[in-house]
Image (cartoon, rainbow, N blue to C red; front, side):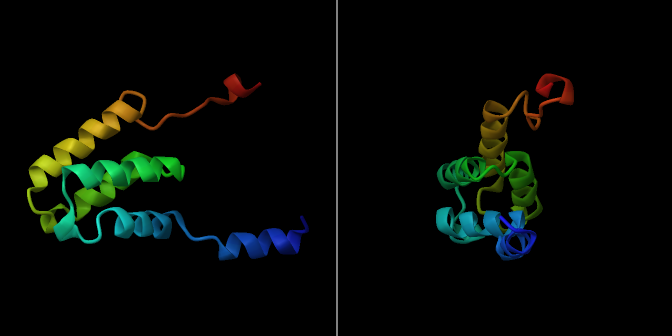
Amino acid sequence: MTKENEMKNSVDAPSVQETMEDIWRKTCGTWKNCNESNVESFLSKCLEHNIDPQYCMNWITRHSDQIPNQSAVLDKAREWVNQHTSTGSPISVSNQMMD
């Protein structure tokens, strides 16, 4: 791939935020429709798209005042993140492991 094509592809690619928001619209629709079930689906889809679930959860938390039953939804999101990430923190690989 030429440098020109690489640059064009990176410019055309949606940002992480845009991708996450698109997943949100497809799984939850609106903040008012957010519930325990679809928040798990949202986080799962984000992980499938290689978006850090903690990043997504932080975004949900920032909008929690718009979510009905926010306490239960946030608890479910935290539980999901803890189950699907290494001790609830992003999984990373050190440079030493890659050598």
